[in-house]
Length: 97
Image 1 (spheres, rainbow, N blue to C red):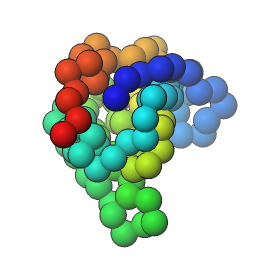
Image 2 (tube, rainbow, N blue to C red):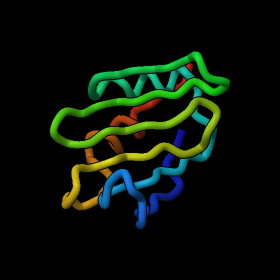
Image 3 (cartoon, rainbow, N blue to C red):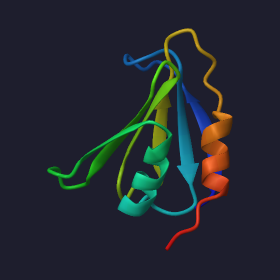
Image 4 (cartoon, rainbow, N blue to C red):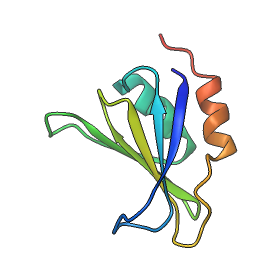
């Protein structure tokens, strides 16, 4: 799993500081749980595509869906939407089983 692109999202009602992260392969449950270790991990599997959220207290909330190649990081309003170092290091160290 590699990050191939990031994009600042503008005009979103949820926050003024949002970053979309694009991966080279779709997110699976194993990967979602793996990135969940950086904060409070919540997964809703009652929908057609399981949805997950990782809350990194006072920093950001990461969310996405299994089978998508993109996830979103929502920062507090006013924060710079840049890829957090701890997240990029976690991705670099990911080994799919």
